[in-house]
Image (cartoon, rainbow, N blue to C red; front, side, top):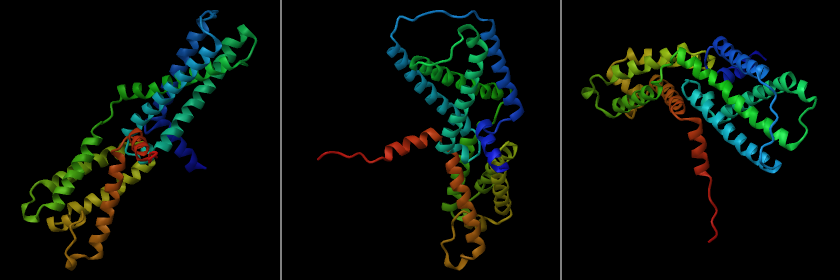
Length: 283
């Protein structure tokens, strides 16, 4: 149960401070509530039919839900969590924010609308409008992350550091040992920068990744150049294929796989999935 709760909180807070995000969301909620409380009741009939209102509300809801998904995907991409780079978990995070926003809409309705109208939403028009408002409010709630990141800037060099690390690894693997100079040190420096960011994360899974990555970097840093080359895959010589090098190389392959996953946006993965769908043509 504790693990499930922790997982849900990670999806909601996306690696940010739970205290700060909760405070900002409560502040936003109070501001909106105060605006509704002080506003005069609106009595206005737009010059459109109910069917047009339903259609426009549906289109607006879809647009705002897509925007919400993209926004959460962008925020998740800034983390070092593999889970938060998975389109499924971004979708789950989107759903959770829509639920929270829906609960806010219900509460606001009973507090600020029902006392004036003495009625509850019962028509398709009212339900479609409520869905649109829910999607809008969900986006407003997620703006709390922007406010958090504005006052507490995050290191946005993840993409650059991942690219540098993997590039240095390729150079070390392909370059003869006697021709290597600063590449091993640059790889270690780039890796340590990422480990430092992982350790600062609020996500438990990221901290475990930091521990595994740091252990591998320490092993790499303490090896000679030929040993470093073996650790990242240059073990083609049958006389040197001892299990220790194969184990260390397997550890590197695991790190490489994770880094490649962390370097791709969830929405980009969806795009690739759509492109990979075979198109049937009539010959």
